[in-house]
Image 1 (tube, rainbow, N blue to C red):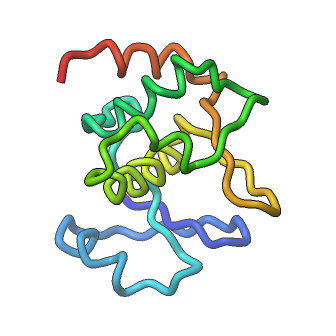
Image 2 (cartoon, rainbow, N blue to C red):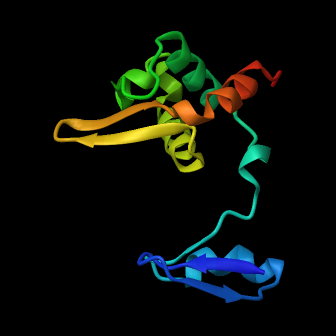
Length: 126
């Protein structure tokens, strides 16, 4: 069973096969989004995401202390900065990094409620 959420918060249930779930992202309007099928605790962190998390931990960017998204990616080589943007978006979506929108750009910090998970992800061998 796949739970589908509307942007206003109403929940609708539908029974779909795996093939239908694969195509559902292209068929639904932008205001609908399927709930994450993969459990968040089973999230596999890429090396780019791991390096961004390590950088934020080293600089103690946790909770109310923010840094710009560009500074969070400065730990990466210049040829990987494009992948760094995608990795940062993925970390925000997974809830490991908290975004803060400001008039001068996007600011990010580590989620203090998930610090134990973040430390475990960074310590895991890749």
